[in-house]
Length: 109
Image (cartoon, rainbow, N blue to C red):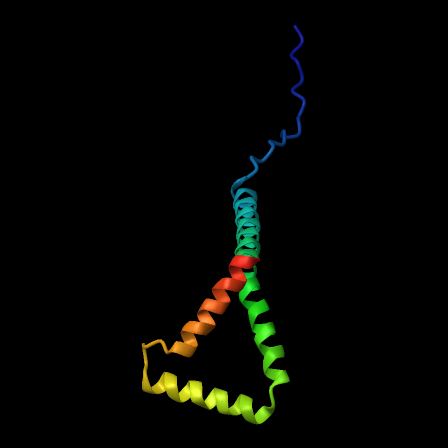
C-alpha cells in the first residue's frame, strides 16, 4: 500500500470572540445621557410654567410704575425698604392689600 502523502495545511484561523463590553458601556452611557437631557428639559419646562404667572404680575407692576413719576416711585421704594428693614417678618397693611390684589387677580384667571 502506498503511504498517503501528508499535505501541509494552512492553520485555520479561528474567529476572535468579540468583546461586547465596550459597546455595552457606550450604549448604557448614551441612554443615560438621553435620559438626563430629557429630565432637564421637563424640569425646565415645569420651572418656566411655575414662574410664568409671577412674570405676568411683574410685567403689570413694571408698567404701572412707569406711569407713576420717577420721584413718587423712588419714594415708594424707599418707604417699602425702610418698612421691611424695620419690621422684618411683619406684614404691613400695604403688603396685605398687595397680596389680596394678587390673589384676586389669580382667582379671576
